[in-house]
Length: 171
Image (cartoon, rainbow, N blue to C red):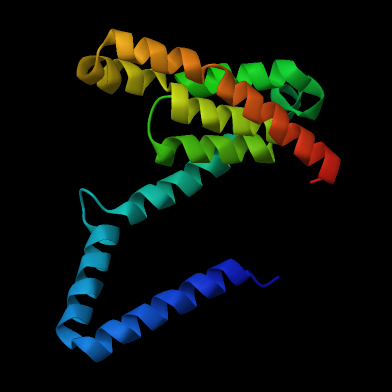
């Protein structure tokens, strides 16, 4: 199956690099060097993180009990599954290189769309690690309290809407 998103992205990148080449070949060399550095730098390279994320998601898929995932955050779990995913998302530490492999493993193990949306939204809006390490020290308890209170229902609401759309469209 042809992935047109990848083809389109690659074509757009190629066109942009051809334009850079025509304008100033030195800039092309700089762009290529910067790209390789971002990917392969021994301490900050994204390629290592991306590879680790693939290995992590596939390893998690092998050890996660699929029947338990389906029971807790599968389609039949309903509102309970969305609530569980909201809580788990809010306490999941780390950035996208940890969170997305977990999300992929949950999805492949039988998690439903609604709980996955709730998990991701909760991780984004209510991440306990970010609240404790960044928000409270920089913005203060009062601001964070107001932000968290108005954000609490959003993961649940989006999870319910996402599950409804998924069920209605049979996705």
